[in-house]
Length: 302
Ligand SMILES: Nc1nc2c(c(=O)[nH]1)N[C@@H](CN(C=O)c1ccc(C(=O)N[C@@H](CCC(=O)O)C(=O)O)cc1)CN2
Image (cartoon, rainbow, N blue to C red):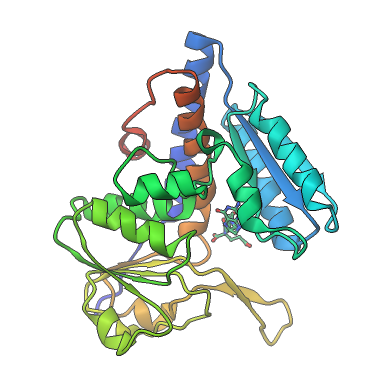
């Protein structure tokens, strides 16, 4: 059996970010506007600190303005809501992101609902979630948007393909299913209560695994030649004590069966931040009634 093609999300994300950077410079030259991204981190979770640092760094790398807010883990919810209200009203800020997860004293839904929908570059606000589900103009959650870009890059036309999305979260599973439906795939959402999970997966031309369980999907759940998108980022123990990241798919067995597959790390993860920058650029253009640059993905891969 030949090995699957590895879908290089890191390279794709680098090229996409470079193209976003060129569009940001053009926006500044032609319209005197600099897209601004505000990132809020509550607490000291080590992984979240890394993601927030990377988001701010990559926003600056794409010539955007970046504003970082770090709040203590025990911050009262009201203080966080006040900060969001201030950023909602700030014309230099076009996109607002609150890094998840939040500590237990904070009601995540209240926080997400407090962000102005047109500045919600995570696409988590119910207005954006509803618009995506009903086929309207939405800011789309970054991870599923990144997955879709990788799929279109690999497969081109997706219409008619059978897609299984493993996982039903609001952040990945549900928006991923909506995006695939929008591309005219035949979509199944599978989850922990799905009967005959392995058989469901084996029917998929496209399998998106987003369950957060290390190496849950073995190679024999995969249809030969299928495209596998692994959203999982799970840190596991190793004998040397250093630990390492693995996905929700058992890469070593899956790579023998699939037609193409995203690795972990270096697959979907880097696309999440690139798509965040894309959403920030889009949000800035919409707020200022300027045309949203199109074809960025095609140009990036050009
Ligand atoms: N407000 C949000 N919070 C969270 C989101 C989100 O989209 N919005 N997603 C995740 C974390 N996340 C971005 O915030 C994220 C996760 C992983 C990566 C990434 O590039 N991963 C690398 C590996 C990194 C490592 O070594 O640890 C990879 O997969 O190659 C980027 C962003 C939860 N919270």
